[in-house]
Image 1 (cartoon, rainbow over the protein chains, first blue to last red):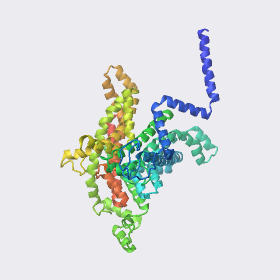
Image 2: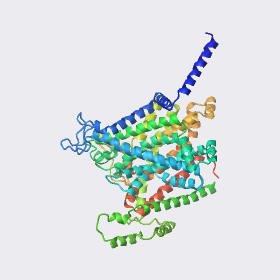
Image 3: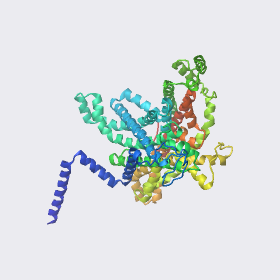
Image 4: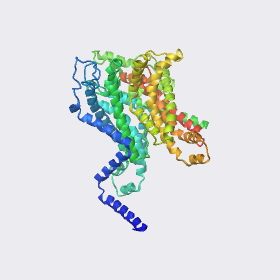
Amino acid sequence: MTASERGAAVVRDAEALARKRFFESTPRRRFLRFWGEFIRRRPLGAFGLLLMLVMIVAALFADRIAPYDPTALSFKDLLAPPSPAHLFGTDNFGRDVFSRLLYGARTALLVGFTASLVGCTLGLILGIIGAYVGGKVDQLIQRLMDVLLSFPLIVIAIAVVAALGTGEDKIGNVIAAITVPIVPRVSRVVRSSALAVVQMPYIEATRSVGTRATRIMFRHVAPNVFAPYLIMMTAFLGQAILLEASLSFLGLGVFEPTPSWGLMLRGAGMQFLERAPWLAIAPGIAISMAVFGFNLFGDSLRDALDPRLRTA
Amino acid sequence: MRRYVVGRLLLMLPTLVGVAVITFVVMRLVPGDIVALRYAGSSVPQDIIDKERAILGLDKPMWAQFVDWMGQLARFDLGQSLWTGHKVIDEVWTRLPLSLELAVIATAFAVTIALPLGVIAAVKQDSWVDYVIRIFSVGGLAMPSFWIGIMLVLGTITFFGWAPPLVFTSIFDDPVANLSQMILPAISVGYRYSAVSMRMTRSTVLEVLREDYVRTARAKGLRETIVVMRHALRNALLPVVTVVSLEFAFLIGGLVVTEQVFNLNGIGKLLVDAVAHRDYTLIQALVLLLSAVFVLVNFAVDMIYMVLDPRIRYS
């Protein structure tokens, strides 16, 4: 085979591969290829994904994995140090810390996921409306968001909780409190992405054939700002878990006997810091690992989907 | 220039009025006022409750209350706390030094770690140094600062047999006692804060290092430290300054949880208590204060931009 023949063969192979990829590409294959590459090329992101999966499995199967009932009191072993029987020791009511951590993952994920999903979706809707409608509506939304943005997340969350009230079975209020400060941050990012999309010829084309505004906004603009939306959602999942822990720590979040990581730090964790440090160490590590996982994954997802986007 | 500054400062007024109106209305839309809260669960007759509302001025229609409050504000009078009866200005004034000091120390701590580490991570991109620094910074974002605080206290108790004092001493009375109390909260807050600024430093320095003028500087044969410090870092500072300043503004009122851990009586705690008590006058004053800090810091950032980048001129 001469050099030119070899060259031609290489080109043929490359073309064949490209053709094969094009014709055999299905959504499912593209999905698998994306994640295959993600795991191979982004080890930190893959590690984050792993941490996330561990947490999700812990939350889903808490009732199967947990060696004890998280609310069962046992006065035989109050403040027992870590041992094979109690992996992370017991608290001042003799409850097994490991089991409470597993059930706490449920609370954290429930609150974090719902708040992040609702907050980002509201932010998406407001951002798209602002960018598409423009004018006074946009100004009004923007100024309102500015006011919310000029306070730290936790202050807004506390204000909302104080307004709605706290209580044993009012976990919805906690979720709402965490949702509110997420909305303006997402809406601002989505709006700036949507502003570029709104200028696109295909939007003008759709408008010129008389499509209704709501349909344009949610069938034509929304899919094109989906990447920042997804990225923000993973980023705020971590934030939401942190906020839930902070609120519960302050006594404004989840209430006993619901197991929550922040709540575990609040009472006994502080009170028996010297005698039983595992009470303060274990839940803190759980919170940190969870947020760490979501942040690593979110960062890598952002790099893979939209490297220009910067989220703090 | 002077016209610009005066204009900017005057423009703050409508912003603050806007914030004032929104807080005023939102607080009163929330069910339950301070009187209802104070007598919750007790069987106090309705006419006493009504009388108390009248004393506090809560029986007037919302617009009348707003006009009263605006009248007070125009005379620089923030009114009295509905809960304690003390003057709002005194309530705030006793807590502000603590919050300010904590914010300043935390900022100093954060910037001293964040700048060098961020620059090193960028210069050594994708090396093991970069990975260690990045993991360190992602860790700072993941660990709740109040938990870091608890761990620091645990550490000093176990290893040094020392815990920070629980009673606050002013820095002017006894600097050593004051600093020994502030250092742990400042570190626990500063770590998270440094993580945010470090990530920003790293990514902007990375961007700037790819610029033509950096290549030119290297081609001229300048030493690498000069290229990085004078050419790259200086041009990368603008976004970093923004992030650092905004975090600083947030620190004044946003340290609620850390204040709780270290038993500090700061602005954050005051705000949370005020919200819980529906202490309208105090909430309004604090919200105004925090937004004023936020707006002023934003203004300061714009001024710093001008110093850092002489091309930026406002007129």
